[in-house]
Length: 295
Image (cartoon, rainbow, N blue to C red; front, side):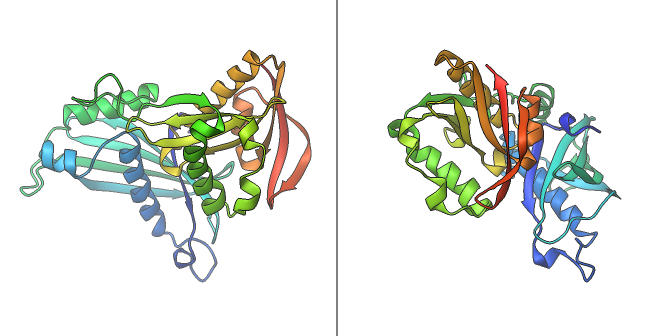
C-alpha cells in the first residue's frame, strides 16, 4: 500500500533494549510499536480512553488478531515512522493496517483487528456511533467529527494562525525545542537565532487550543523551522503550515519560495511542488538539500 494512503504516522526511535544479539529489532517488539502507535492514533483523533470509550460508552476494545510481515529490519537508534490506518469497521470489529518505514524504506506490514465488547462481561457489543463517526471522518477527510459540546470546532481540527515573534514566539519555541532540540539533538543555540524577530511565523493550533506545529517565513522568501509534534504527525498539520506560508510569500510579493529540507522530508516537500537544487549538505549534523517552487 502506498505510504500516501496513510493519514497518520507515529515517529519512534529504536531503543537499545529492543534489539537482539544480531543488532536488529527483536521480532516481537514490532507488536509493541503497533500498540503504541494505535494509542497515538486514538489520541490524534481526539478519542479519550478510557474516559469516553469505557466510562461514557460502556465498551472496551480487545485484540483478536495480530499479523506481521517482515520486509526489512530496523536497527538501534533508527528513526521509524509507524503508519496506522483503519481499513474497515464492522458491527463490532475494527481492522487496522500498519506499515513501518525508515525514511523511504518499507520495513514492516501488519494487521490488528479489535472487537468491541462489554468491559467485564466480555460480550460482543457494537462499535459506538461516536467512535465510528470520528474514525470514518478522519480516514475520509483527515478531519474529526465534533463531540457534543465541542461547539463549532471539531476535536482534532487544526487552525493555522500567522503573526510576529512577539505574539507567537513562546508557543513556537516550545514546539521547536521539542522537535529539534529534544528529538533531533540540535543545540538550542543553533535552533533559536537572531532571525526569529524578523520573520512571519505560522502556528498550528489543535482543537484543544494547544500548539502542535510551526514554521517561519524569512523576509527574503525562505521557509524554515518547519516542525510538527510527534502526536500530530500524519494529520496534514505540516501541509497546512506550509500552504499558509507559501500563500504569505505570495502576498508579500515573492515569486518563488526556497527552503532547506532535511533529506528524509524531501518527499513531503516534493508533494507540494518543491524541486531539489544541488547536492546534499550538512547543517547541524543533519543532511539537508535546497528545494524551490514557484508561488
